[in-house]
Image 1: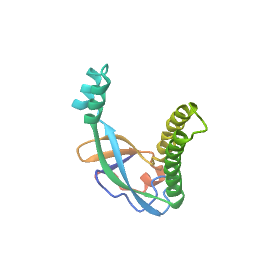
Image 2 (image 1 turned 45 degrees about the vertical axis):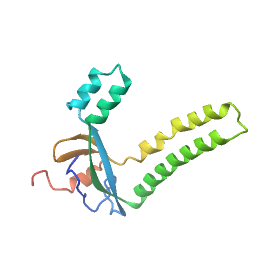
Image 3 (image 1 turned 120 degrees about the vertical axis):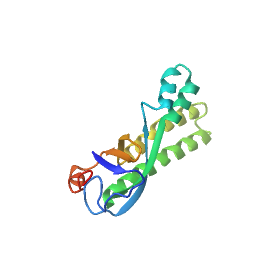
Image 4 (image 1 turned 90 degrees about the vertical axis):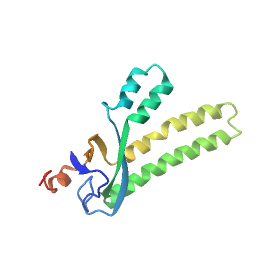
Length: 153
């Protein structure tokens, strides 16, 4: 696990494999604080879908962290994002297809349900939790973490 300051730029190494970085990605990382007022509203109003969404929206906190990626992990991330957009475009084309008749809506829904999968795979780091000025990131290479100074050093 890596502890970083919010809105920080991580060192010049790939966070996944500790190779020299090829690019920086300004990752927007979100975290739902289970103790926030929004999360409490979401739990209390769980039976009312609209209120639950409002509560979840209020309980999220986020920050940006610039993470380094090597060439292969950058390509992997971009490929996953491109696949996600390809699924969305395929769903739109299926909706416009006249040859499928009544099945085009069902086909488009199926493709749209698959669209988030590559996006989820494109996420390079995940948030374990946040405090006022720090973010705890998981999914970081142990070699990468091992080369960093200890917290408070």
